[in-house]
Image (cartoon, rainbow, N blue to C red; front, side, top):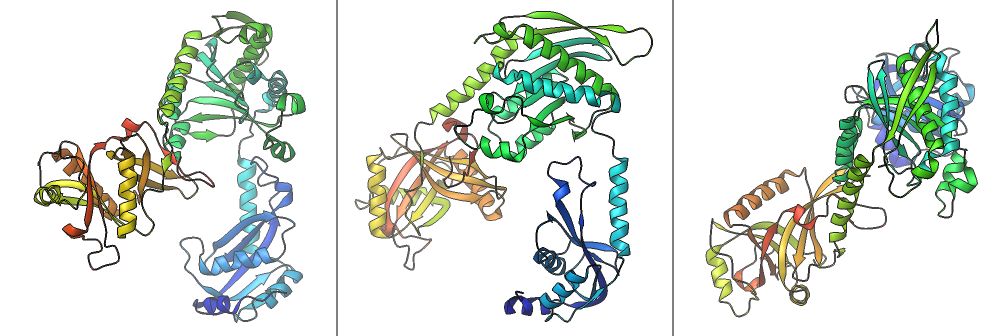
Length: 543
């Protein structure tokens, strides 16, 4: 058995001990997560409850084959960083209902002055799991009983037909009902890109267009999530079994040849701005979704050759179904299913326009212009000082077009050693000096951080990052606000000062003799570079 490191023991011993009894256990989550992706049959919940205060301090879901070490990990978190509103604390006593776990904890926690006892029952945890089960039992079924079999069979028919091999996501198919309070449903196919497979059934054309527009604007992850949740649609999407997911990561994987019809785990649901994602359909919705997909499938099968053309013409067909949901005389349902070539052309034009904007950025972002360990700041230099630098033969000043307006010119200051400053100046000279300065939004989606990326554009249109500033940093926000105001006063003129003396007494406040170069430039709006949101990618810089 591994004992806790002595440093950890001393840290835990500093946590105040309270006269309370905690219950701890690990139990299967089978039956509690039957409608959630994953494999609940092979998962267990580790839970620690404060019996004195009646609150859950920590909880984890782990694989059933994980050892008792996981129980200790959750317990330590319950002590140091418990769920709010609990405060860090060390219990006086712990009770468990498993003898082996009791002996394991006694060995692992022997230095923490905690009594560990065995009890046959854990009333608080028992009550909690009964509550979980009651919630699960009261949750509506994913599909109503009458339509469950029909919709699951329809999902398998969609997988077998594979409409994503024929239609792109901009080839929208309309299904006109004019009954049950539904006018037209707009069907969009997912899967041609080989990432997600399924159908989106938009309840309005406005919702479809708004989401496409938001997705094309290169917004942040948070903004895209908000746009996703603002959709008004039903959906059918497929999830792959784990073994197929592994094959999907293989570049040589061919879904059509290897696994046609093996899409698994079909999921039906609804998205609405007021409801968010709802993973179930009621009786009325199930009926509409069923006949919409059936009309769509019949239309695709009977017009496959025409729909396979690069430019799809206007096609409209009526398809008749018998309404099996109503009692008495069977009623005929006439659905008008049509292609929408004008809408498809509009959506495709939006995609192509976005691609054209991306193609405008022909030069990669360099991050090797600013020397390592350089001092960097945003500030202002008075016009009188600039005038002195213009007449200083030792200062490189290639442009003198800015006219004095406002208190001074906003500048980016880069202060480094003399050799590195000269090297930086030479690089800028060879690139045609400085043309523009820009702050472009950047995002680290893994850490959920937002940046202002400072970018320099040279005369040959090369782009260099000069700084990464946290958007929520109050000091940076204040500096940016002043920068923007000063750029407005100067009519868009700003500058870059390259100075030496980074290790001397003038660090951060270079003297005139330290300033080796002044580059005038235009302050650029991010839209002028058409880069959109720049995202930090694994094993690479912003791109």
